[in-house]
Length: 191
Image: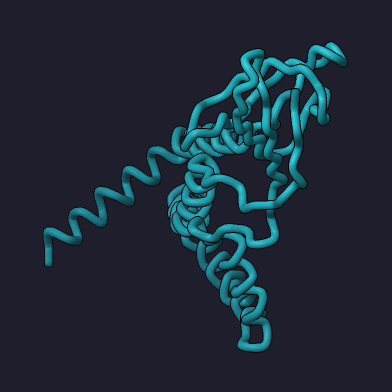
């Protein structure tokens, strides 16, 4: 037997995949202009590189103090340590009684996929025990013969796509990056 409490909202759990993805995109945005400039210099010569620098200076004039808000917004979006304050997930607490009339607390954090759990339903629940409560990850509702799943984060897919893109770019730009790294190392030794 189940007794349900009202739904509350909390911040989502910390997501390491989302943090790693943001860090990788930040690194990619910082390093890519230098790699592209070096590639243009090596493959096309100095004239297109001069045009690229002039184009970059032309674009920089749009980042005047009046347009500084766009830079602040870009920093806000790409900051890897930022947590979205408006993003909240529902949390439901259930008091579940077993066949021996013992009462257990079941906590379901996140959006529900599949069926639903209502008061007086008969369920089988699976999850992890934390602080005396079962963090539900899936359940089976015997009254409605439906499975209930708590939706998990899909941020790992974005991390895999980002790592794949960086691997592709690393393979494609290996020679310019390697040459640039050796040049920087030689300049460091001269000083």
